[in-house]
Image 1 (tube, rainbow, N blue to C red):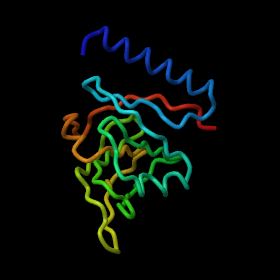
Image 2 (image 1 turned 90 degrees about the vertical axis):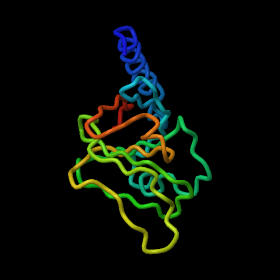
Image 3 (image 1 turned 180 degrees about the vertical axis):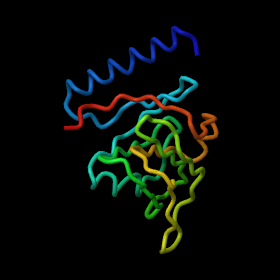
Image 4 (image 1 turned 60 degrees about the vertical axis):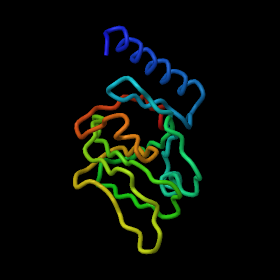
Length: 152
């Protein structure tokens, strides 16, 4: 990434944060990957939003995702109950570094559904269309950039 690209990304993050703050709690933010590409992520901020997640969605586009934001850093496991499409799941620490990736997790076909997750505490989980972690060449320790709206 060039210096200009880096400055543009920082400007976009600042403008995104200001935009979110001006409108109250926005439901979508941009998440930037190390190579400069991004996805638009729907925010799951409340317990109810996190419980629902991407259930019953018939498709997820390559430039879409959902970012789960947790109040406290902890070990957060996920399952694919009522999820209709394969997903990539990225667990991020408080510094927004990837600590664990599950790739192409299939929809759950029968109860009990398996759980997926890291062994260490995280603050965020980003769900993407299955295969996108490979397409973005994501790996553990990569840092993602995003600006959250004011949460309280």
